[in-house]
Length: 177
Image 1 (cartoon, rainbow, N blue to C red):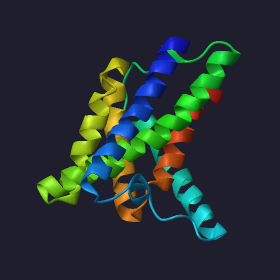
Image 2 (cartoon, rainbow, N blue to C red):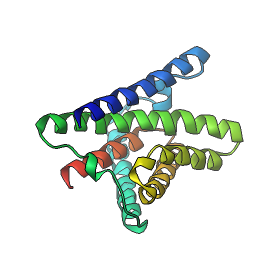
Image 3 (cartoon, helix red, strand yellow):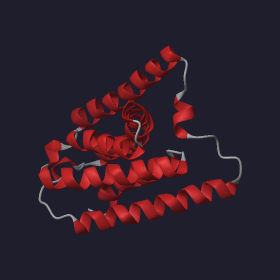
């Protein structure tokens, strides 16, 4: 699994690099602007973690409510080296996918369609299609998941709760398989 994990890890960060280059070329916003302002007080960290916990709980509810076979279970690590790289990949996916899909793509689709709702739905659909290898049931769940995370990003004007919840949900399958 190591070659797969490493190639996906490189792909995740290449996507963020691509977004950063595009943003830099237009001199409109930066990656930091997409994520949110820096935390200024410990209470802001606590609020983002609490929101992430609620989002993660809703994600678990979606897992139960939307039936379907399939999933990435066969992709789970076996052995210490794979576990370490998988953990780096899970955290990277949380950071990179939230920046690319909820930060950049959702913002662009919202501007293109002049509709926040349409922007959220379209980015969720694009995000879900990227997971077709997991099967149709998981793709439906991932679309709902992308919509949930998109709505939270729009509501909070921050990707931080989504990054935290996304990374945790990817790590969760490792620790509680």
